[in-house]
Amino acid sequence: MVVIGILAAIAIPSYQNQLRKGTRAAAQAVMMDIANKEIFHLQAQRVFTKTIDDLGIKVPDDVSRFYDITVDFPEPQTTPPSFTITAKPKTGTRQEGDGNLTLDNAGTKTPADKW
Image (cartoon, rainbow, N blue to C red; front, side, top):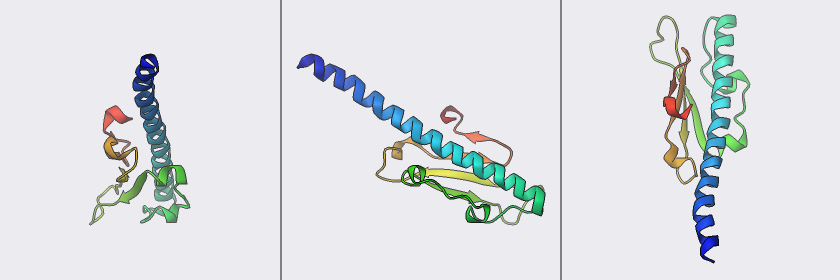
């Protein structure tokens, strides 16, 4: 029984950490997709969109259950135009203590250790 307890004490936190990393990677993939489509939209229309819906992107359930993803545009719009995508972990989920992820139009990713 002691051996099982020791194995469980090691394996369960490790498993939970891998789940967090996998969910974070899924959110990062969605953020990269949004950024790529925003850049494409800017090239085609000369402006960024104002919502994710305008890009035709639906955030997958396996990401939306754990993160709120938003795109922020500075007002007034800067020259050149810019945006920041934020994935904020939802309260009460396994991602809660993981912190926000951000990606901007220049490709800056924060926090660096989470990317």
